[in-house]
Length: 256
Length: 263
Image (cartoon, rainbow over all chains, first blue to last red; front, side, top):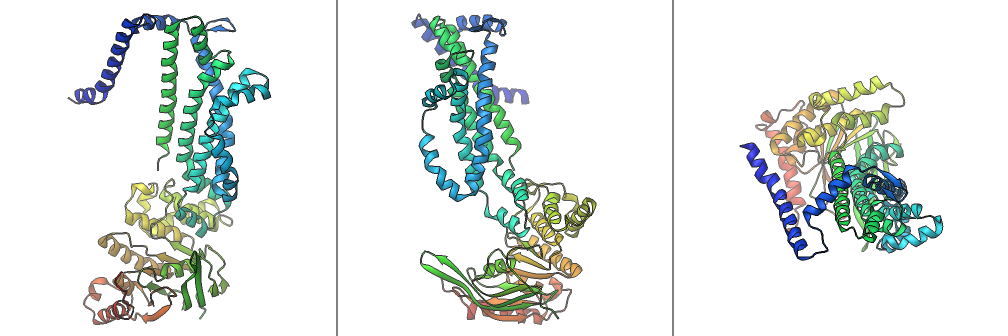
């Protein structure tokens, strides 16, 4: 009885949604000869994933390597952005002077499309791989600065009063009050940042080349292998979804 | 006898866009060790401001404030504060919330085992030993307020300052906590300054009731000595003529002499 209810309320709706999606995709594919249908794409995916880690040449590697390379770039750029953005956010949130100093720059640079930074990266680093990491860095640093600073500023006066009447040292204020109070905001920033970073990596790699899911899409377009492009879209979507779920789980553990 | 808290000619004004706003003026008050003093008055009369001045969270714009003959220049562990909304840190257990205060005051001079013992003692004083490892969101409002009291008492303050500590609780829980507070204060011989807007609470708990005039520029209107012997029992007081007379005096001050104009 319980299993039936679970099936009807939790499993059935998404399954139906996916079924409809595949059906519509199939119908559209029938009418347009260039677009491969679900069945053809599936066969192609089975072949692709049967050997995900082959290495034939620097530019012809398995899909697994492509995904891992992209994730590596995202991790590196994102990690550096966290290392700089989170402490910076704390300082901006804590010191109003610094906030007023940086806010025009942050507001001006934040809406800039991350790819506009690519030529600067290429110019400075003289290589495509660090330039791609640079683009990830610059696109994911803003949400982390802004959300961390917001978390610090939202700190209830009550907690600061507790710190004052207990006469806590700056270090204790940071470890016992400021950091835990800001953590949920920080995690939101991290989640937004990693989402943007994963969005941007595909576009950046299309431009820079090398091994990676973005370049792979471009390569398969040049080969006119449309099934692989569709597979890549699914891969990017699923990996992005998994990253998001991971961070939501993490955020759930620090809700007070 | 030494005066514990000494307030002389204190004035407090705040800067606002319309110019300075005088909240308190000509405040003179001396509090003896072991005395229980309540501050009562209509909302906006500056009673919380006065408490925050004693706590050192605000500094007066005029006059002298001393605690045990030392000038109050900021918050300090000699004055324990219980906030109206408990202000426990939600990411720390009840134990850790109290330990934070104990560690700050005694951490330099005592061993870890001693600090732990002090924390356990403070929580057992408010009968919360069973909830030591619970987080604030896992316990009731009354229990949270008790942890707040334990945290303040654990620092062994010279004065315990309470800002409407039971204001947010339901009537039954409030009565229960008032009874417990009376026992704790009797056992620890604490000096207490408490802000309240509850006439019964003031008469039940206080040695003296400080009644404040309406703001702006509020000051102390009258001070009422409560000469009921301790320990007090709320049930027997209900039939005590002296209790009703004292209660009547406070009500008369609040609703006749300082009647608040209908807003």
